[in-house]
Every structure is written in structure tokens, then in C-alpha cells.
Length: 266
Image (cartoon, rainbow, N blue to C red; front, side, top):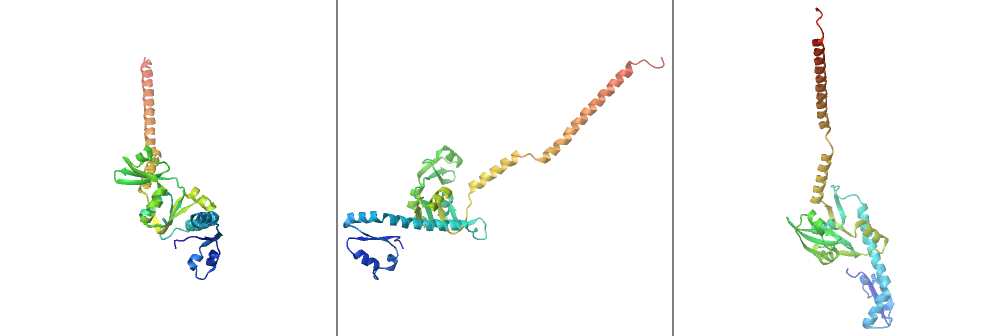
């Protein structure tokens, strides 16, 4: 049902009779959050009803947020689903959420209503690439990292999700940070997450490439023990050559002494 909360307001007693009537559809009756008296009719009376029921509507919104975030945190606490330990039924962070949206796997899209991230579409050698950053423009470092030659578009990620979530078949829930769970969601999970329809393995080739490059650098920094062992015989050989040279010099000295001594027969 699309109706999440219902406020009954009016000048006379009809609103009270309607709230208790058996003719009132039970599906709507269960969603009445407040019955209030107003002193005016038409638009002015509507504004008065909204002002009087603001707290009740806010509480209703917070209760719904608590339910959604509670389900999200419960999903995180569970063991990884399926036989593949890397497959999960939730995700958070702009990159993983966009990946899940493209895969059509998002069952519920949870977004902070003041999400400060931007979505940039870059021109790369392979075509186009969408990336997110806190800055309104990607900047030279981000362009260099992805080997991009140009920025095709930039917009708030929140605006993109509001406009496009239906095209991905993903219901969107805008959440506040006014509750304890909402604050934890924003500070600990970046304010954007999703509950998935089925387990997904998140794999990003750029991360794997960076890890391989880091491992190669570490291997180059660490010297090979076998190389050290190969150097040892060379050191010993140098010492032996020095020793031979010393022996030769001793022999030469002895020869000189013998040549300078007088013959015993004389």
C-alpha cells in the first residue's frame, strides 16, 4: 500500500465518527496516525492540520526508518549467504550500491536525505565510467587515476538516485540522521546502502590490479636469500686470492734474502 500515514481533521464530529466507523476500510483505518480539530476549512484548515500532526507524522517516519535500518543491521550480522563466502545480501558505499543497481539486485535502496556525494561520468579509453567523490568536480587526480580524458557530467548522487531508482526497479527510502540508528548509518556506512534480492559477489577489477601492483612492489623490496648465498662464495674467493697474493709476496722476500746472503762454501 502506498499510504504510509493518514491524518483525519475537521471542524465537526464527522472525523471522529469516521475514525471509528465499520464502513472505514480497515487497511486505511490501521494507518491513521492522528485525529485533530481545526478551526478553518479548505487550504487554511489543511495547513492547520499539517501543523498539528507534524510530530505524529515525524514519529511515524522515524518508526519506519528504525524498521528499515534494523533489517539492514540484522542482515549484516548474519553469516554470508550461499556456498560462496564472498556472496552477501547487502551492500553499502556508493560504488557497491551502484554496482548492485546495475545488476538489478537491489531490493531496498537506503539513502541519507542529505547525502553529500557527487556522481561523475568520465570519458575513458573503454568508453564511459561513473565514479563518485565528495567534490562537485572530479579533479585532476581522479581523472589521472582512471586514465580519463574528459568529464561528461557531474551531479549529486542523491539527485541521480531519486530520478533513476525506478528504472533499476529499486524502491528508494530516504532516511534522516535524527535517530540513533540513522546517525550510525550515516557515520559508519556512508549514508548509502542497499538490501539485495539475492546474494551478490562484489568484484572490482581496479582493486585487484592495485593489489597486484602492491604485491609486486613488496616483492621487489624484499631481497632473495638465495642471492645472498650466491654472494658468499665470491667473498671467500676474494679472500683466498688475497691470501695467495700474501704467500707470493712472502716467497719473493725469502728469495731476495737468500740472494743477498754470502755462499757458505766461501
